Length: 217
Image (cartoon, rainbow, N blue to C red; front, side, top):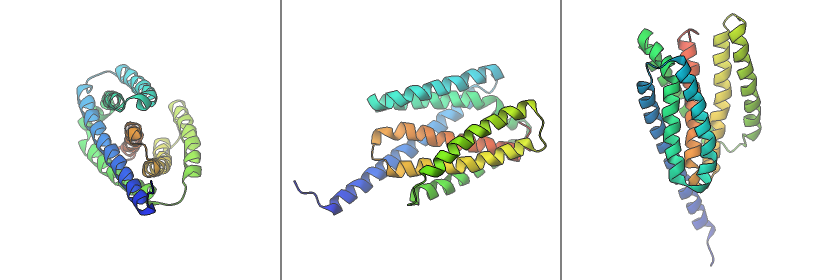
């Protein structure tokens, strides 16, 4: 049967809009359960937080396989992922909330603006960002090594430098994730894309905490 190019184009746009809507809805859901996890884990120890971080990334790896078999299962794992991340971040968030809650609001607002700007750039640009994303991935590995160095060696303004470099890297990663979101036609990939975008936002938020908190974390 003949299908007109115009009809195909509208179908593609409809699929993109559907995937975008589902993904951002899942991002909002993940943020909500993250907040619940952070509240529930506000009095937990640092050791429990570390276990929650490990558990979250184990769940993320399982999601990569579950997404291909069952979208509801992947969505359920995304909820568990969000809760575990909230528990993992709870001690840090509780500390800031107890000492200077304004820093949390400042960081949250800056994160929302950051993701909105770079997400829009990535979603609308026609330029292929794959090279930039590849560079950002290796830069992220280098940043992790730099973070380990900061634990053992004092570098003046090291925490601030770490946060600023991190924001630059996640600007690229955020643009890449939103470009991938626009180009994808697979609606079942929504949970994985939501997890990736939420991780972008969470890391950006933690970097802003460092900046507004003067590196006290």
